[in-house]
Every structure is written in structure tokens, then in C-alpha cells.
Image 1 (cartoon, rainbow, N blue to C red):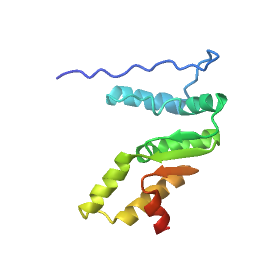
Image 2: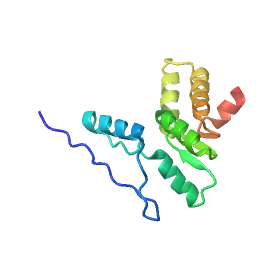
Image 3: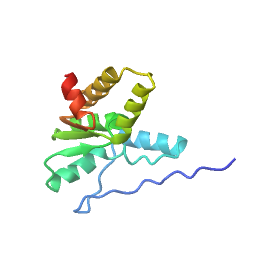
Image 4: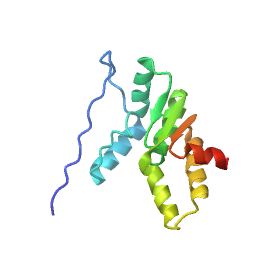
Length: 139
């Protein structure tokens, strides 16, 4: 059986050289991911620290993409920063819904409204999506 090399966590720092601390949830999640899955835990760790850096550097709004797989990140960024938050429902998410509807597996309108509603519930103030025109007509 081949061993899987998991990524080592990188120390992240602010521009002033101060370390961005991990909270206990980050530490538990990183340990779980590093011990069980060959995934880079970076999207989950230090989310608030990275968002704070963007805000310190003058960002008026933060953005998370892709939308659906990162709903937990959307919620965390919104709760921890309170900053205006845009979420990008990327072309791959659009394509999956289009393909599922074309094959008769889902009702397109219902699936799209559910996806966009979940993004909004997670904390998005704005949603960028290829479904903008259709969703506006449906709503």
C-alpha cells in the first residue's frame, strides 16, 4: 500500500510579521484533515485571519468562491468579520445544475432557487451567478 503524503501547514503571517493564530476548531479540523485525507486544509484554517488581512489592506467587500462547497467558509467569514460578503456561484456549479436538469434528474428552477437560497442563508450579501437572469425572472 502506498503512503499518502499530506500537506504540512504553513505558518501564515500578517504584513507586520505577526502570526495569524489558529483557534481550537482550526487545530482540530487541520489534525483531522491531515491525518485522514490528502487534502490541503488551508481553505478551512485561518479564514478569519485572511479575511481580516484583506480588510486591513483596504478591501470594501470580501468574496468567497466557489459557493456551494464553501458554505461553511461563507458563514464563518460573515460571522467573524461582519464585512459585506459576495459569493461567486461558479460556472462548474451552474453546469452541474444545467446538466442535471437536462437529464431530467432535477427540476431546474427548484434546484437553482434552493442553491441560491442556501448561499444567502449562509451569509452572502451578494451572489454572482450565471443564473442571474433566470433567477431574477423566477423571483
